[in-house]
Length: 209
Length: 407
Image 1 (cartoon, each protein chain N blue to C red):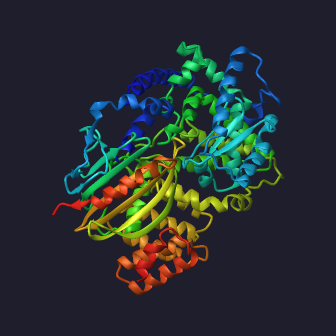
Image 2 (image 1 turned 120 degrees about the vertical axis):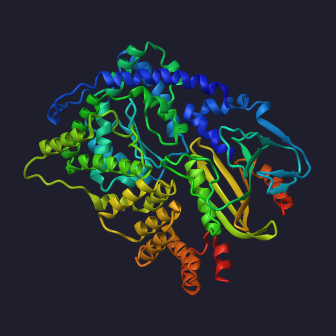
């Protein structure tokens, strides 16, 4: 969910133009860790995956991320593409840290949510925190994930930086916890370029028993 | 995070401070500005003659070019033509010169740029109950142009903040710091950046109100609708803030105004003053709904999914003053479902059940009705609702999931 933070922080400071063109300078070596091509555990360790090529893991900061189950990766920088993992989030928790007094809130997860409800929770995440002004659900279908009855959600959204992005989420609620892997990338080029990696990562995912 | 962000934002704060100082210094108590005294300061086909204003126009022409090409604009010719017709009616002497753009942003906002182009946010169309209200906002914004407020406030600010190059100012001003409320959409904000240069004083807002009331009354719109818009805006912001147990946020469409109470009094007095006895005035609600009706589901969707239950509930109840229907009941249910507090499942369930009883219930109402029935263990009824959903929307993006539920 880190890209939401990145965009929000840039947005609060100045128009995007300055952030996106210069953003690269800010994301120095210290902000990312290399993800090598072998099995790694993600989030709080509740799930493990294997990436087909090296990716970059966004280093989690004490300031912004206290959602232990959420981890973000990117290949070309968070403006262009990202894969996020939710490694077994408990009922009653939120995907992102937010103030109780914020006017607009990302809904909380509940373990009795059906896939359309999880999809709606994600849509609000994009609208509230990602600055999406349009959000289109392209498909919602059953799909096995981590050996359970899960779902696949496909969507695209126009963000206030005037870029169309496209995403796919594969997820499942297992023993009352939410497991998801999300791909979200610029619709032009980057989505298609990272989809095979995403599918390989989803295929490799294992739950910690 | 991005290193230059910090540097720029610090600068923008400094300039922002200059702006608010300008606003405060003009905030002396004053008598009501009478609509009759509000003479437009410019005529048709106005072009700037002084050098600084010419420079400003050049920058603004570039800004307009960018905005006109933005993919955030709604291009629906029915809607853009409608807005053009309204500004052509209530735009006073500059009516033929104005350009107007509709941006897809779910916020209550509208703005006029110093060269005479206006940007209306789609969230405004959700909140207006009739054409007279929309015309009121557009006339108010036109009033800023007709009274040359932008150039006046820009000169005033430049004098105070000791910055001479407009380009440098634009690079340095952040929308949020300047006090222009753009919600979480500040990124869009080349707009915010530009607009923070034109912080209107209280007196200017009062002038725009007065001239706006005059313009809409002359066009035959019920002038009291100006006061009603303001009442709705305050009501919504208070509802949202109360809900989160905090004070109302500042900085929206009609910001930097004297106390809300006195503005209401002034707007009502303006309405009485510009009303000609014996003349009939119309709010044109039917025409408004006939024109924007087809995007109302989208506008409601944009608002409700922001999960701001206080504001959304207030808005839906305001619209429902003109009568409940399936669409409004459905979105009422969506508010509770997204809010997701104890007991909200039941509230949502009741709203969906009420929604599907109306002939105009949207397909999605049947889907959510089905889901809530399913969760309540009423499988047979749930299947009937799902079947109805698929019948109404055979190509629904989630059809595969719904078919699985049907078994």
